[in-house]
Amino acid sequence: MDFILSAVIVLGSIALVAAVILYICSKKFAVKEDPRLALVSEALPGANCGGCGFPGCSGMADALVKAADVGSLDGLNCPVGGTEIMGKVADLLGMAIANTEPKVAIVRCNGTCELRPKTVIYDGLRTCTAMNSSSAGETGCGYGCLGCGDCVSACQFGAIMMNEKTGLPDVDEEKCTSCGACVKACPRHIIELRKRGPKSRRIYVNCVNKDKGAVAKKACQAACIGCGKCTKECKFEAISVENNVAYIDPEKCRLCRKCESVCPTGAIVAINFPPRKDKPLDPKALAEATEKTTPNSNNENTVKMKEESK
Image 1 (cartoon, rainbow, N blue to C red):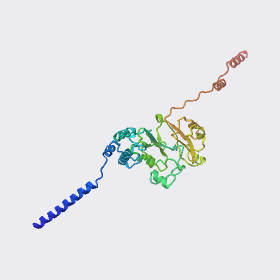
Image 2 (image 1 turned 120 degrees about the vertical axis):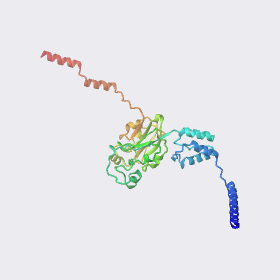
Image 3 (image 1 turned 180 degrees about the horizontal axis):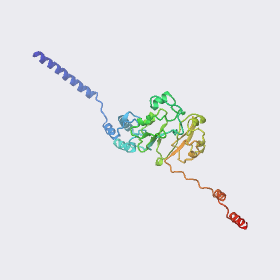
Image 4 (image 1 turned 90 degrees about the vertical axis):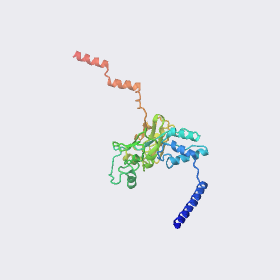
């Protein structure tokens, strides 16, 4: 009995000493958490998509709090929450943020099934990453969309769907949060985050093929051939041609659509613009065309008089 009692006393003493030591250590080495961190984390959408460049919303919250201590939130933005969420975060941190123009994902490939026919049949793991690693794909274009839908799987918001008719992904602008997950998922880097633009209007080169013109045109009828006509037409120096493919800088583009008109392959697309109005005919040309198609009344009378005389 004394043996059991002694053991209990010894063990209890050890536990008491250990508890005291742990308590002292916890107080001495305690890491105090900024109370703002929890508030900011709650304000963020909690999508953990990584579109902000940080590992989840907790990483973004930590970066925001640290940036507030420095005195500037420049460069930090939650693409999912947008201006509304960032405004709430700024209020919590007592900071001001600059308004950022919303973006949307665009698929820079117009190689539909009709314009870019298949040349081979791929028999393997049906993912874009696997197909890109093992071959050039099922068409002659080594730069275009592979059509396996890795971007669809990566999107957490259901903003991308594969179009069965064209074989290309379609982006739903209303659902797209510009998180960038589809951009990272595409092994050929044909998806780009671009500013929505005024009234959601955008102009861009719908091709990333870097082959020379003849080779690119043979692989896809809608490929950019790097002819440079769009560059010469643009008065704002918004278009450049590099590695045989043109690119329109959204910061310089004034949406005049002149480049779209001169593109010989239709590689430049204008989104959400009203239909172009037909140019009015030249009055002189219209008069000439009317004369050619309308019989002369004097001639008709002459013919009738000749017939009557007979």
